Image (cartoon, rainbow over all chains, first blue to last red; front, side):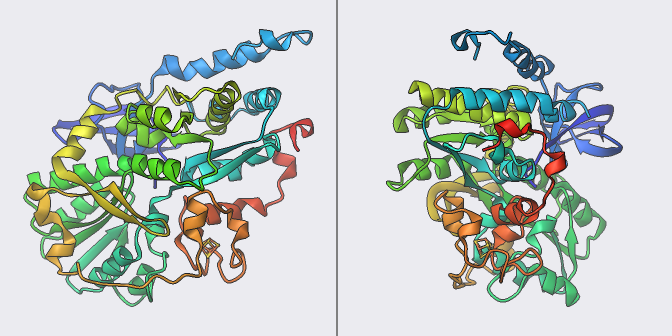
Length: 86
Length: 375
Ligand code: SF4
Protein backbone atom coordinates (compact mmCIF):
# COMPACT_ATOMS: atom_id res chain seq x y z
CA UNK A 1 0.00 0.00 0.00
CA UNK A 2 2.81 2.40 0.77
CA UNK A 3 4.87 1.85 -2.33
CA UNK A 4 4.42 4.86 -4.58
CA UNK A 5 5.40 4.32 -8.19
CA UNK A 6 6.24 7.02 -10.75
CA UNK A 7 3.92 7.59 -13.68
CA UNK A 8 3.77 9.93 -16.68
CA UNK A 9 0.89 12.41 -16.92
CA UNK A 10 -0.60 11.96 -20.40
CA UNK A 11 -3.71 14.08 -20.05
CA UNK A 12 -5.41 16.36 -17.53
CA UNK A 13 -9.08 15.45 -17.42
CA UNK A 14 -10.68 17.35 -14.54
CA UNK A 15 -9.68 20.52 -12.75
CA UNK A 16 -12.11 21.15 -9.87
CA UNK A 17 -10.76 21.57 -6.31
CA UNK A 18 -9.98 18.18 -4.69
CA UNK A 19 -10.77 16.53 -8.02
CA UNK A 20 -7.98 17.67 -10.32
CA UNK A 21 -7.64 14.47 -12.29
CA UNK A 22 -5.26 13.17 -14.92
CA UNK A 23 -4.58 10.13 -17.04
CA UNK A 24 -1.28 8.75 -15.78
CA UNK A 25 0.71 5.99 -17.48
CA UNK A 26 2.66 3.35 -15.57
CA UNK A 27 4.42 1.30 -18.25
CA UNK A 28 1.66 -0.52 -20.13
CA UNK A 29 -1.19 0.62 -17.88
CA UNK A 30 -2.90 4.03 -17.76
CA UNK A 31 -5.02 5.03 -14.77
CA UNK A 32 -7.10 7.97 -13.67
CA UNK A 33 -5.19 9.64 -10.84
CA UNK A 34 -6.07 12.51 -8.55
CA UNK A 35 -3.57 15.36 -9.09
CA UNK A 36 -4.92 17.85 -6.52
CA UNK A 37 -1.82 17.62 -4.32
CA UNK A 38 0.59 18.37 -7.19
CA UNK A 39 -1.01 21.56 -8.57
CA UNK A 40 2.02 22.46 -10.70
CA UNK A 41 2.30 19.10 -12.45
CA UNK A 42 1.39 19.21 -16.13
CA UNK A 43 1.13 16.84 -19.08
CA UNK A 44 4.58 15.32 -19.70
CA UNK A 45 5.61 15.47 -16.03
CA UNK A 46 6.32 12.41 -13.89
CA UNK A 47 4.59 12.06 -10.54
CA UNK A 48 4.81 9.61 -7.64
CA UNK A 49 1.43 8.03 -7.08
CA UNK A 50 0.27 6.44 -3.87
CA UNK A 51 -3.19 4.86 -3.41
CA UNK A 52 -4.62 6.68 -6.43
CA UNK A 53 -3.28 10.12 -5.54
CA UNK A 54 -0.17 11.87 -6.86
CA UNK A 55 1.85 12.91 -3.80
CA UNK A 56 4.97 14.36 -5.40
CA UNK A 57 6.25 15.57 -8.74
CA UNK A 58 9.59 14.13 -9.84
CA UNK A 59 12.34 16.70 -10.21
CA UNK A 60 14.27 15.60 -13.27
CA UNK A 61 17.53 17.38 -12.48
CA UNK A 62 17.62 15.70 -9.07
CA UNK A 63 16.78 12.34 -10.64
CA UNK A 64 19.90 12.61 -12.79
CA UNK A 65 22.14 13.48 -9.83
CA UNK A 66 22.79 9.93 -8.76
CA UNK A 67 23.99 9.05 -12.27
CA UNK A 68 26.45 11.93 -12.26
CA UNK A 69 27.68 10.60 -8.95
CA UNK A 70 28.03 7.12 -10.44
CA UNK A 71 30.03 8.53 -13.34
CA UNK A 72 32.32 10.18 -10.84
CA UNK A 73 32.84 6.80 -9.17
CA UNK A 74 34.24 5.47 -12.45
CA UNK A 75 37.80 6.41 -11.65
CA UNK A 76 41.06 5.13 -13.19
CA UNK A 77 42.38 1.87 -11.75
CA UNK A 78 45.48 3.53 -10.32
CA UNK A 79 43.37 6.06 -8.39
CA UNK A 80 44.25 6.91 -4.84
CA UNK A 81 41.45 6.14 -2.41
CA UNK A 82 41.39 9.65 -1.01
CA UNK A 83 40.72 11.03 -4.48
CA UNK A 84 37.36 9.32 -4.77
CA UNK A 85 34.57 11.87 -4.54
CA UNK A 86 31.84 11.05 -2.06
CA UNK B 1 9.90 2.90 -17.35
CA UNK B 2 11.74 6.15 -16.71
CA UNK B 3 12.71 6.81 -13.07
CA UNK B 4 12.17 3.15 -12.34
CA UNK B 5 14.29 1.06 -14.69
CA UNK B 6 17.30 3.32 -14.49
CA UNK B 7 17.33 3.04 -10.71
CA UNK B 8 17.46 -0.74 -11.11
CA UNK B 9 20.48 -0.89 -13.41
CA UNK B 10 22.89 -3.43 -12.06
CA UNK B 11 26.13 -1.65 -12.97
CA UNK B 12 25.16 1.33 -10.81
CA UNK B 13 24.19 -1.03 -8.00
CA UNK B 14 27.56 -2.74 -8.23
CA UNK B 15 29.47 0.53 -8.10
CA UNK B 16 27.67 1.76 -5.02
CA UNK B 17 28.00 -1.63 -3.31
CA UNK B 18 31.75 -1.55 -4.02
CA UNK B 19 31.96 1.95 -2.58
CA UNK B 20 30.16 0.81 0.59
CA UNK B 21 32.72 -1.99 0.95
CA UNK B 22 35.54 0.48 0.42
CA UNK B 23 34.49 2.92 3.14
CA UNK B 24 33.23 0.48 5.80
CA UNK B 25 35.81 -0.09 8.52
CA UNK B 26 33.62 -0.81 11.58
CA UNK B 27 30.46 -2.80 12.33
CA UNK B 28 27.30 -0.73 12.02
CA UNK B 29 23.58 -1.44 12.46
CA UNK B 30 21.16 0.51 10.30
CA UNK B 31 17.36 0.42 10.38
CA UNK B 32 15.29 0.74 7.22
CA UNK B 33 12.09 2.19 8.62
CA UNK B 34 9.69 1.35 5.80
CA UNK B 35 8.39 -2.14 5.05
CA UNK B 36 8.47 -1.33 1.33
CA UNK B 37 12.22 -0.87 1.66
CA UNK B 38 12.50 -4.17 3.56
CA UNK B 39 10.81 -5.93 0.64
CA UNK B 40 13.06 -4.21 -1.90
CA UNK B 41 16.13 -5.22 0.13
CA UNK B 42 15.15 -8.87 0.46
CA UNK B 43 13.69 -9.18 -3.06
CA UNK B 44 16.88 -7.82 -4.65
CA UNK B 45 19.08 -9.50 -2.05
CA UNK B 46 20.74 -6.18 -1.36
CA UNK B 47 21.68 -7.35 2.13
CA UNK B 48 23.98 -9.91 0.53
CA UNK B 49 25.88 -7.16 -1.26
CA UNK B 50 26.88 -5.44 1.95
CA UNK B 51 30.06 -5.94 3.96
CA UNK B 52 29.49 -8.43 6.77
CA UNK B 53 30.16 -5.72 9.34
CA UNK B 54 26.98 -3.98 8.22
CA UNK B 55 23.62 -5.16 9.56
CA UNK B 56 20.23 -4.00 8.37
CA UNK B 57 17.34 -4.31 10.81
CA UNK B 58 13.70 -3.70 9.98
CA UNK B 59 11.58 -0.90 11.33
CA UNK B 60 7.94 -0.42 12.28
CA UNK B 61 6.99 0.92 8.83
CA UNK B 62 4.30 -1.55 7.81
CA UNK B 63 0.84 -0.07 8.46
CA UNK B 64 -0.91 -3.42 8.13
CA UNK B 65 1.41 -4.94 10.75
CA UNK B 66 0.98 -2.18 13.32
CA UNK B 67 -2.82 -1.79 13.05
CA UNK B 68 -4.05 -2.80 16.51
CA UNK B 69 -6.03 -5.96 17.06
CA UNK B 70 -9.04 -4.04 18.38
CA UNK B 71 -9.25 -2.11 15.09
CA UNK B 72 -9.36 -5.40 13.20
CA UNK B 73 -12.08 -6.70 15.48
CA UNK B 74 -14.02 -3.45 14.96
CA UNK B 75 -13.56 -3.81 11.20
CA UNK B 76 -14.85 -7.38 11.35
CA UNK B 77 -17.86 -6.30 13.45
CA UNK B 78 -18.82 -3.52 11.01
CA UNK B 79 -18.18 -5.60 7.89
CA UNK B 80 -20.66 -8.18 9.18
CA UNK B 81 -23.55 -5.67 9.26
CA UNK B 82 -25.98 -6.33 6.40
CA UNK B 83 -26.37 -2.66 5.48
CA UNK B 84 -22.62 -2.09 5.17
CA UNK B 85 -20.29 -2.21 2.17
CA UNK B 86 -16.85 -2.46 3.78
CA UNK B 87 -13.96 -1.14 1.66
CA UNK B 88 -10.34 -2.01 2.42
CA UNK B 89 -6.91 -2.33 0.89
CA UNK B 90 -6.40 -5.99 -0.05
CA UNK B 91 -3.72 -6.94 2.41
CA UNK B 92 -5.88 -6.14 5.47
CA UNK B 93 -8.23 -9.00 4.61
CA UNK B 94 -6.03 -11.86 5.83
CA UNK B 95 -4.68 -10.19 8.98
CA UNK B 96 -5.81 -12.27 11.95
CA UNK B 97 -8.25 -10.62 14.35
CA UNK B 98 -9.07 -12.17 17.75
CA UNK B 99 -11.05 -14.98 16.17
CA UNK B 100 -11.48 -14.38 12.46
CA UNK B 101 -10.18 -12.25 9.63
CA UNK B 102 -12.06 -10.08 7.13
CA UNK B 103 -11.74 -12.78 4.49
CA UNK B 104 -13.84 -15.10 6.67
CA UNK B 105 -16.55 -12.43 6.82
CA UNK B 106 -16.40 -12.06 3.03
CA UNK B 107 -16.64 -15.83 2.54
CA UNK B 108 -19.72 -15.83 4.78
CA UNK B 109 -21.43 -13.28 2.50
CA UNK B 110 -20.23 -9.95 3.91
CA UNK B 111 -20.01 -7.23 1.26
CA UNK B 112 -16.29 -6.48 1.49
CA UNK B 113 -14.68 -4.74 -1.46
CA UNK B 114 -10.98 -4.42 -2.11
CA UNK B 115 -10.06 -0.93 -3.25
CA UNK B 116 -6.71 0.48 -4.26
CA UNK B 117 -7.60 4.06 -3.30
CA UNK B 118 -9.81 5.65 -0.62
CA UNK B 119 -11.33 7.72 -3.44
CA UNK B 120 -12.82 4.52 -4.86
CA UNK B 121 -14.66 4.05 -1.58
CA UNK B 122 -16.12 7.56 -1.94
CA UNK B 123 -17.29 6.64 -5.46
CA UNK B 124 -18.91 3.47 -4.13
CA UNK B 125 -20.76 5.61 -1.56
CA UNK B 126 -22.05 7.88 -4.34
CA UNK B 127 -23.20 4.89 -6.36
CA UNK B 128 -24.93 3.12 -3.43
CA UNK B 129 -27.00 5.72 -1.58
CA UNK B 130 -29.07 3.08 0.27
CA UNK B 131 -26.00 1.38 1.74
CA UNK B 132 -23.52 2.46 4.43
CA UNK B 133 -19.98 2.58 3.05
CA UNK B 134 -17.13 2.19 5.56
CA UNK B 135 -13.50 2.61 4.49
CA UNK B 136 -10.74 1.00 6.56
CA UNK B 137 -8.30 3.94 6.67
CA UNK B 138 -4.98 2.44 7.71
CA UNK B 139 -1.62 3.91 6.90
CA UNK B 140 1.16 6.39 7.58
CA UNK B 141 1.41 10.06 6.60
CA UNK B 142 1.49 9.18 2.91
CA UNK B 143 -1.88 7.46 3.11
CA UNK B 144 -3.21 10.04 5.58
CA UNK B 145 -3.13 12.61 2.76
CA UNK B 146 -5.26 10.35 0.58
CA UNK B 147 -7.58 9.56 3.50
CA UNK B 148 -7.96 13.26 4.28
CA UNK B 149 -8.86 13.87 0.65
CA UNK B 150 -11.49 11.12 0.72
CA UNK B 151 -12.98 12.59 3.93
CA UNK B 152 -13.02 16.11 2.48
CA UNK B 153 -14.63 14.93 -0.74
CA UNK B 154 -17.29 12.97 1.13
CA UNK B 155 -18.07 16.08 3.19
CA UNK B 156 -18.13 18.38 0.14
CA UNK B 157 -20.47 15.96 -1.62
CA UNK B 158 -22.57 15.67 1.59
CA UNK B 159 -22.39 11.87 1.50
CA UNK B 160 -24.19 10.90 4.70
CA UNK B 161 -23.61 7.19 4.00
CA UNK B 162 -19.79 7.35 4.07
CA UNK B 163 -17.60 6.84 7.13
CA UNK B 164 -14.08 5.70 7.94
CA UNK B 165 -12.50 3.36 10.45
CA UNK B 166 -9.31 5.29 11.10
CA UNK B 167 -6.04 3.65 12.16
CA UNK B 168 -3.38 6.12 11.15
CA UNK B 169 0.21 6.34 12.30
CA UNK B 170 2.90 9.00 12.31
CA UNK B 171 6.41 7.74 11.72
CA UNK B 172 8.56 10.38 13.43
CA UNK B 173 7.33 9.67 17.00
CA UNK B 174 8.03 5.97 16.38
CA UNK B 175 11.59 6.75 15.30
CA UNK B 176 11.99 8.91 18.38
CA UNK B 177 10.72 6.12 20.59
CA UNK B 178 13.25 3.70 19.02
CA UNK B 179 16.08 6.25 19.47
CA UNK B 180 15.23 6.79 23.11
CA UNK B 181 14.96 3.09 24.01
CA UNK B 182 17.99 2.17 26.12
CA UNK B 183 18.35 -1.24 24.41
CA UNK B 184 18.21 0.08 20.85
CA UNK B 185 20.91 -1.28 18.56
CA UNK B 186 20.16 1.15 15.76
CA UNK B 187 23.02 3.49 14.85
CA UNK B 188 21.58 5.06 11.72
CA UNK B 189 18.19 5.33 9.99
CA UNK B 190 17.09 5.04 6.40
CA UNK B 191 13.89 7.09 6.70
CA UNK B 192 10.86 6.36 4.52
CA UNK B 193 10.98 8.42 1.33
CA UNK B 194 7.28 8.58 0.56
CA UNK B 195 6.29 9.58 4.07
CA UNK B 196 8.81 12.42 3.70
CA UNK B 197 7.33 13.46 0.32
CA UNK B 198 4.36 14.53 2.41
CA UNK B 199 5.98 15.64 5.68
CA UNK B 200 9.37 16.91 4.47
CA UNK B 201 12.28 16.21 6.78
CA UNK B 202 12.66 19.27 8.98
CA UNK B 203 11.17 17.33 11.86
CA UNK B 204 14.14 14.92 11.73
CA UNK B 205 16.71 17.66 12.33
CA UNK B 206 16.21 17.90 16.13
CA UNK B 207 16.07 14.09 16.38
CA UNK B 208 19.42 13.60 14.62
CA UNK B 209 20.96 16.21 16.87
CA UNK B 210 19.41 15.02 20.14
CA UNK B 211 20.28 11.34 19.66
CA UNK B 212 23.49 12.00 17.65
CA UNK B 213 22.30 9.66 14.92
CA UNK B 214 22.45 9.98 11.12
CA UNK B 215 19.11 9.89 9.32
CA UNK B 216 19.04 9.53 5.54
CA UNK B 217 15.74 10.02 3.69
CA UNK B 218 15.81 7.10 1.25
CA UNK B 219 13.82 5.97 -1.81
CA UNK B 220 12.71 2.47 -2.72
CA UNK B 221 14.63 1.31 -5.77
CA UNK B 222 17.78 -0.80 -5.31
CA UNK B 223 20.03 2.10 -6.25
CA UNK B 224 18.19 4.41 -3.82
CA UNK B 225 18.56 2.01 -0.93
CA UNK B 226 22.25 1.33 -1.55
CA UNK B 227 22.97 5.04 -1.96
CA UNK B 228 21.07 5.70 1.29
CA UNK B 229 23.19 3.04 3.04
CA UNK B 230 26.37 4.57 1.60
CA UNK B 231 25.42 8.04 2.84
CA UNK B 232 24.55 6.68 6.28
CA UNK B 233 27.75 4.61 6.62
CA UNK B 234 29.82 7.53 5.37
CA UNK B 235 28.39 9.67 8.18
CA UNK B 236 28.96 6.96 10.79
CA UNK B 237 32.55 6.42 9.68
CA UNK B 238 33.15 10.16 9.99
CA UNK B 239 31.31 10.55 13.30
CA UNK B 240 28.65 12.76 11.70
CA UNK B 241 24.95 12.82 12.66
CA UNK B 242 23.10 14.76 10.02
CA UNK B 243 19.85 14.49 8.16
CA UNK B 244 20.56 13.85 4.47
CA UNK B 245 18.17 13.47 1.59
CA UNK B 246 18.96 10.64 -0.83
CA UNK B 247 15.47 10.78 -2.41
CA UNK B 248 15.94 14.29 -3.78
CA UNK B 249 13.88 13.63 -6.90
CA UNK B 250 10.68 13.24 -4.86
CA UNK B 251 11.29 14.83 -1.44
CA UNK B 252 11.76 18.47 -0.48
CA UNK B 253 12.82 19.74 2.90
CA UNK B 254 9.40 21.27 3.61
CA UNK B 255 7.42 18.41 2.06
CA UNK B 256 4.08 18.78 0.31
CA UNK B 257 2.34 21.78 1.87
CA UNK B 258 -1.01 21.12 0.16
CA UNK B 259 -1.05 17.64 1.61
CA UNK B 260 -0.04 18.85 5.08
CA UNK B 261 -2.80 21.49 5.07
CA UNK B 262 -5.36 18.93 3.93
CA UNK B 263 -4.35 16.45 6.66
CA UNK B 264 -4.51 19.22 9.27
CA UNK B 265 -7.96 20.30 8.13
CA UNK B 266 -9.38 16.80 8.75
CA UNK B 267 -7.37 15.17 11.54
CA UNK B 268 -5.81 15.98 14.89
CA UNK B 269 -2.78 14.33 16.45
CA UNK B 270 -3.56 11.69 19.07
CA UNK B 271 -1.99 8.87 21.05
CA UNK B 272 -1.84 5.71 18.96
CA UNK B 273 -1.49 2.06 19.85
CA UNK B 274 0.92 0.17 17.55
CA UNK B 275 0.30 -3.57 17.39
CA UNK B 276 3.29 -5.41 18.82
CA UNK B 277 4.95 -2.16 19.86
CA UNK B 278 2.58 -0.47 22.33
CA UNK B 279 1.20 3.03 22.76
CA UNK B 280 3.24 5.98 21.54
CA UNK B 281 2.10 9.51 22.46
CA UNK B 282 1.28 11.82 19.55
CA UNK B 283 1.91 9.09 17.00
CA UNK B 284 -1.54 8.85 15.46
CA UNK B 285 -4.26 10.83 13.72
CA UNK B 286 -7.97 10.93 14.59
CA UNK B 287 -10.80 12.97 13.09
CA UNK B 288 -11.05 16.52 14.40
CA UNK B 289 -14.44 17.82 15.60
CA UNK B 290 -15.44 19.10 12.19
CA UNK B 291 -15.14 15.61 10.66
CA UNK B 292 -16.30 13.62 13.70
CA UNK B 293 -19.49 12.56 11.90
CA UNK B 294 -17.32 10.44 9.57
CA UNK B 295 -15.98 8.33 12.45
CA UNK B 296 -17.27 4.79 11.94
CA UNK B 297 -16.51 3.78 15.54
CA UNK B 298 -19.11 6.30 16.75
CA UNK B 299 -21.58 5.78 13.91
CA UNK B 300 -21.74 2.01 14.52
CA UNK B 301 -21.08 2.10 18.26
CA UNK B 302 -18.07 -0.23 18.10
CA UNK B 303 -15.70 1.80 20.24
CA UNK B 304 -15.91 -0.54 23.19
CA UNK B 305 -14.84 -3.78 21.59
CA UNK B 306 -12.10 -5.14 23.83
CA UNK B 307 -9.70 -7.82 22.75
CA UNK B 308 -6.83 -9.84 24.08
CA UNK B 309 -3.66 -10.16 22.08
CA UNK B 310 -2.20 -13.63 21.55
CA UNK B 311 1.43 -13.73 22.41
CA UNK B 312 2.79 -16.29 20.02
CA UNK B 313 3.73 -13.67 17.39
CA UNK B 314 6.91 -11.71 18.09
CA UNK B 315 6.18 -9.00 15.54
CA UNK B 316 7.03 -6.23 18.02
CA UNK B 317 10.59 -7.48 18.45
CA UNK B 318 10.96 -7.68 14.70
CA UNK B 319 9.56 -4.20 14.06
CA UNK B 320 11.81 -2.63 16.67
CA UNK B 321 14.91 -4.19 15.16
CA UNK B 322 15.57 -6.57 18.09
CA UNK B 323 14.97 -9.77 16.12
CA UNK B 324 14.85 -11.04 12.53
CA UNK B 325 11.87 -13.02 11.13
CA UNK B 326 13.91 -16.22 11.04
CA UNK B 327 14.45 -15.90 14.81
CA UNK B 328 10.72 -16.53 15.28
CA UNK B 329 10.08 -20.20 16.14
CA UNK B 330 6.87 -20.15 14.07
CA UNK B 331 8.46 -18.75 10.90
CA UNK B 332 7.71 -20.98 7.90
CA UNK B 333 6.17 -23.62 10.19
CA UNK B 334 2.86 -22.73 11.88
CA UNK B 335 3.14 -19.27 10.34
CA UNK B 336 3.11 -19.03 6.55
CA UNK B 337 1.46 -16.56 4.15
CA UNK B 338 -1.47 -18.93 3.54
CA UNK B 339 -1.91 -19.51 7.28
CA UNK B 340 -0.47 -16.48 9.10
CA UNK B 341 -0.16 -16.15 12.86
CA UNK B 342 0.71 -12.46 12.66
CA UNK B 343 0.29 -9.51 10.35
CA UNK B 344 3.96 -9.30 9.24
CA UNK B 345 3.45 -12.61 7.39
CA UNK B 346 0.41 -11.25 5.51
CA UNK B 347 1.19 -7.75 4.50
CA UNK B 348 2.84 -6.84 1.23
CA UNK B 349 5.13 -4.72 3.40
CA UNK B 350 5.60 -7.15 6.29
CA UNK B 351 9.14 -8.26 7.15
CA UNK B 352 8.15 -11.91 7.70
CA UNK B 353 6.41 -12.13 4.34
CA UNK B 354 9.46 -10.57 2.66
CA UNK B 355 11.76 -13.21 4.14
CA UNK B 356 9.33 -15.98 3.37
CA UNK B 357 8.70 -14.90 -0.22
CA UNK B 358 12.17 -14.02 -1.34
CA UNK B 359 14.88 -15.37 0.87
CA UNK B 360 14.18 -19.00 0.08
CA UNK B 361 14.19 -18.43 -3.66
CA UNK B 362 17.36 -19.54 -5.37
CA UNK B 363 17.91 -17.06 -8.15
CA UNK B 364 21.67 -17.02 -8.23
CA UNK B 365 21.76 -16.57 -12.02
CA UNK B 366 19.78 -13.39 -11.73
CA UNK B 367 21.85 -11.81 -9.02
CA UNK B 368 22.94 -8.34 -10.12
CA UNK B 369 26.22 -8.48 -8.26
CA UNK B 370 29.65 -9.91 -9.03
CA UNK B 371 30.74 -12.75 -6.76
CA UNK B 372 33.67 -10.71 -5.45
CA UNK B 373 31.32 -8.44 -3.52
CA UNK B 374 29.40 -11.17 -1.76
CA UNK B 375 30.44 -12.07 1.75
S1 SF4 C 1 6.80 -15.45 11.58
FE1 SF4 C 1 4.60 -15.18 12.00
S2 SF4 C 1 4.38 -15.48 14.20
FE2 SF4 C 1 6.55 -15.10 13.79
S3 SF4 C 1 6.80 -12.88 14.04
FE3 SF4 C 1 6.40 -13.25 11.86
S4 SF4 C 1 4.17 -13.02 11.67
FE4 SF4 C 1 4.60 -13.26 13.85
